[in-house]
Structure formats: C-alpha cells, structure tokens
Image (cartoon, rainbow, N blue to C red):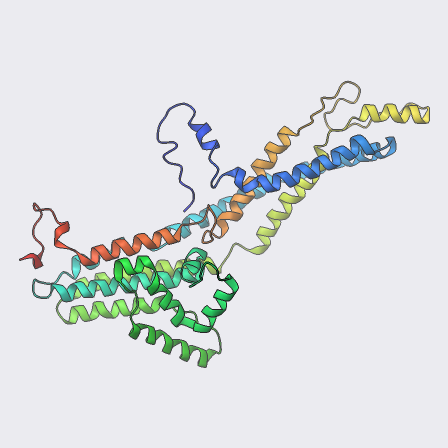
Length: 402
C-alpha cells in the first residue's frame, strides 16, 4: 500500500499541514527532486549564457525565441490532458487494490462450516488447514507472477549472490525450486510448517513436464490449480458428512469469489492503459516544460535595444514579450519561484500517475503485498486451527470441547 499518514492528521491541532509537508517517504519531493535539479541546471545554463555570453545581436535572437515559446506553451491543453489521464490511472489503481484477495472471509466460512464433532474434530481441523494452505498457495503463485515484492521474497536469492545468478538457478530448478522456496519462508513455517507437500510438488512437476512437452514453452505454475484442490476437498468433506450440500455450495462460491478476484488482477496486469495514450501525455508534459525553459527566462529587451542602438547609431525598439514592461524597470527574478511551483504541480501529477500505473512494484507508493501475505497466512491458520482457548467462557462451548 501507499505510505500511511493517518496518524499525522488524527488531530485538529494547528500545524497539521506542516507535518504532512515535512514527510519524506512517499513524498512529492522524493519523487521529483532529481528531475527538478536537472530542470534548474538547464534553466540556469541558458540564463547565464544570456546574461554573460551573448552579444546584442544574439540577445535579441534569444528574446525572439523566448517570445515564441511564451506564445506556444499556451497552446498545449496540459491540465485537460493530465486530468483525464490521472483520473483513469487512479481509478484503475483503486480497482486493483480492491481485487487483492484477502482470506479473512473464506477462513471464517471454513471454520463455521467444517467444525466436525468431538470425535471428528481433528479430521475437520486438518481439512480446514489443507483448504487454507491451498488458498494461500494459490495467492502466492498469483502474486509471484505479478508482484516484484513476492517474486523477490521467494526467489531463493542469497544476500551475497547476484540477482542474475539467482534467477538462472531458479530457471534451472523450475517449479520445484519455487515451491521449495515457499516452504522455506519463515512466516510459512510459523503458521503452516509447510505450505506444499512433496506429493503436491510432484503434481506441479508433472504438470510442468506435460505443459513443456505440449506447448514447448516455459511453464508458470497456475494459481488456480491449488484452488481446484480446495474445491475437491470441500466436495469430499460433504461426502464424509462434515457439511451439508448447501454449506458445500457456499464454500465453493467463496473459492470462486477468490478465484474471480485473482483473475481480475491477471487481466489488469496484462491489459495496461493504451501505450499511445501514455505517450501522448508524456510528450505533452515534457514538451511543455521544454518550452518553459525558454519562455520563463528573465530577459531585458530594453537593455538589449539600448546596446543595439549604441552599436548601430540608430534607435532600436525593444521586443515586446508578453506582459513584460519594455520601457521601464524589469523585476529580475534570480530564482524562478513560480516556474518551480508549476513544475512541481504538473510534473508531480504525471509522476504520481506513472508510479501507480503498476502498483505491484517495490516503490514506496506500491502495494505492500508481502505484508498482505503475512496477514493472510496468520489469519487463515488461526481461523483454521480454531483453538478452544480463544473462546471466552461466556460463549457456548465448541462441539469438540466436551
């Protein structure tokens, strides 16, 4: 998820806005400072050349360029273009977040439906744990294909080992290497001991061999395969009397809902905002600020006209540039304050949109999928265990407590 600052604005005391503006992680300043430094270097390079290196003729030519750029930058409807683009990107970003599967709901359904009796509680508990193992495994396989955080987490890379070498080893070991790395995760060991058994690894290996033989392509383990196993377990639970047909259908619907959100994420990951639209916005923003490099320069047409008049012994009329006073004093803005503000607003708008276009990366503004996985592992294992000690004495006793 993006950087949280809710605690900063939790009170209505004065100066809250200052606290927000002073935050660095995930801030506008962190996003823009490199671009702004480059922009100011270019701005002052032209400014110094105009002030110190140009003769009267060159100064007049530069002023004509400034006048032309000042007229042209008004013709780019930048706010209109950026507004539509950012609105579309933010809407897509929010929908992606809403479709990240959280396993709370299905965990509670599994606990409420597959309770068993005093004699069959242990079997029911193993059923619940197996179903939640499969749901977590499907979640990890999905996110491993779209999230950099999950990809790095289960890459099996040692700290001293280069990333390229780790990827090569992962490629050679195939699906078995990935599944074994999942079992080695400390959080997986803490909550489930292991998320995938040797028999289940063998099932994936067989699927990998068949896929490569048939399609001659690299095999990416399907996230929906463990969900199939979970559905089959629900059916077996009904057949052995752990739930009635209606409850089994409810569990199937919950599994299908999780599968649907996973499929939606795959679609969002595969179908990006049209490239041509993104290119139009990028070209519009950068061309606008290229014009601003010249149109916002300090120029003094009156001084240039005086220098040319003295050189040619004729009266030269100053060039009229925008609303600048050509015959009186000109305010010399040594630092382009309002140009910097404009750069921060408009370029910041673009940078935000580019950051959230793919929120499954590893930046400050991206979704913290690794933390979501930790939460899913914990809540699903605790719900599946359903320990009697977690119930207060005032509550009705669970059926297995005697």
